[in-house]
Length: 357
Image 1 (cartoon, one colour):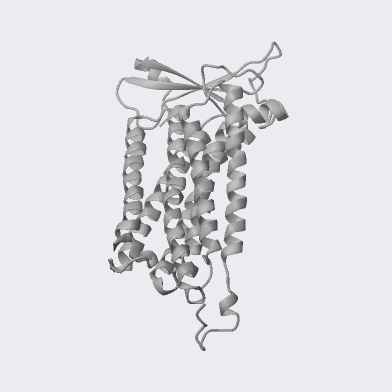
Image 2 (cartoon, rainbow, N blue to C red):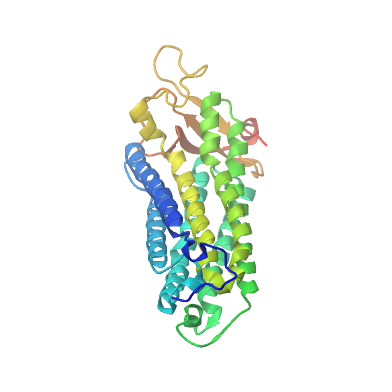
């Protein structure tokens, strides 16, 4: 092990971010795992099957676990410690496993966004403009994320140059950091869009304020993910310090995992109402509101919504039925925090009466 230069502060050789990073990422991933498990149970209760977006969340938690596993191997070889305090063979392995971990790491915060997008498409039935915006953002963001993975290994020729496995040449480090910042900005924009859009729609509905708060908060969990993404971007300049890569990169390792799990948890929360209702009863999100029950039995309030972006005389109307008293979920419909979706098409004045811009 190389000795620390004389100008290093006391305790320099003992500085180690590894245990903190491993503990935090393990806890966050464990919490996300519980939310994914709860989502699957809830979906089995409500629609008796597992849908595409459920499989996406399962894939995401597998990626998150794989990311933590690879990061822990990197930490075992010295990740989180100063590079000049490690044996060459250990520093090489620490850098290698850190770089490899970024593959499931990037995918773990990219893919769950699509589970949220699919969920919103089913719940809110966005109009043409919002469908174009949502799926354009989805495609562009995915391409940027894949580009990051390519750059991760293509920046050096041969790739092994990055971890000291071969002699070669590498791009200017600023190119990689700049691209990572572009990915971070794109991720934040996507997160905030997926949070703001449902919040605006749901706040305009007439329902119990507690349920409105629960709906907007759960579907708007992307605010948290967006904030984490922005903070993570502030840690990226540390990657410019290639001479101390194993110590500088671990902040990015930590916040990549936190971002991924925030997005994943946000994708799961809106689907948990059937499970919450089964455990705590139908009043779990605020009980009944006026006009829900006239005493003759369970009833439902219906609100017709024409989403922003609808155009033309023939408009698509999504009737959102809020299950406030009944404990039975329709097998043929998705239940999202008590909302069942039923789609119908109206035209002329009937469509205009349901319109909300």
